[in-house]
Image 1 (cartoon, rainbow, N blue to C red):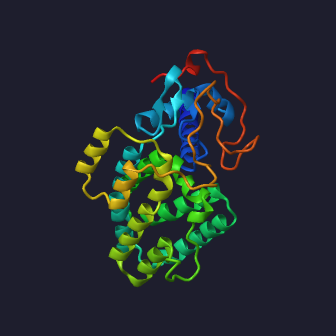
Image 2: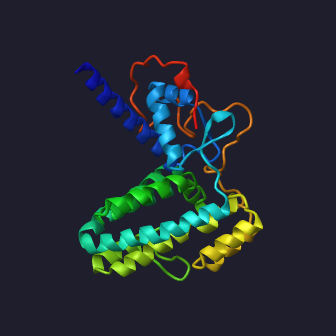
Image 3: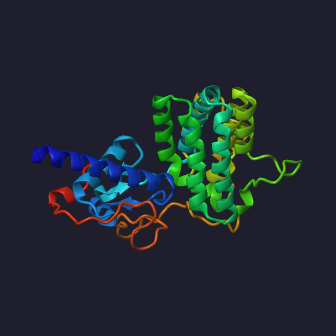
Amino acid sequence: MHSSMQHVEHVSLSTQVLREVRSAIVLGDLAPGARLTFRGVSQRLNASVTPVREALLQLVAEHVLSVGPGRTIVVPILTRAQFLELRVIRVLLEGLAAEAAARQAGSRLAGELEGIHRKLDDAKRARDPREATLQNRAFHFRLYEAAALPALCSMIENIWLRTGPYHRRIFADPSKHVFDAPAGRDKPQHAHRQIIAGLRAGRPAEVRRAIEADILSGDPIILPYLPYDRPDRIQALEQSLPMLDSLSRGLLRSDAAPTKGARNDAAPAKTTGGPPKGRLKGQPKGRPKGQLASRPRRAATTAAARPRP
């Protein structure tokens, strides 16, 4: 009985740790290139090493994290071709989920999404990239969950984890924001507003087109910050994915530089020197918002403290 209770508690703690690390990745608190150690993350989350090791290695198996030099765990730095491959998958999967949600929920969902988008717009006006990233994710996944297709949502979640460290870049540059002023010649309507309008009008195809446009709008902001690929890799991507638009093809080969003066909240973390001990980027000392509550530290064996691929 005692052994069974310990197992349940351990599984619960592992799930909590996994949830915290996933959140830190998708919100950009862990920047591309950040290096983690099991012991460092366990200290940050005030948890024992074993559930931390299990959580990080699960994310390695899902290709969300990778094993880096010195057997540390690394948040991968995507190349332009890698990002665009994932973006094409996002357009296909999220377009399908959005259209299915419109058929399932329709106008019933519109009011809820409008409230979330209002919070997103408030965060952008407050120049709070982290909160904007949080509300943007809430908007998208509330829409996708309404499709009642859990396997599809799980696939989308994995792609968001792999591209999540870069989503914050979209909200870190105020010059790129499309606010909610009335649409006109110089101020297009935000894609989220088009989604809400499509839901209210009962037009699933319109909702799908709007979510696809929303995903594509991030390319000119994110891609200039990513490293180039070898010419053969670029050629292979263009041949495999003929649906790539001309803008994306140009950014694959362009020498475009990041917007001057933009805050680089989602820039790759430096990897020189000692690895940061699981520090979650941009979070204050003490217990950051959304992190595990403090609990008595458990004894961790020396063997458990070393990362294994």
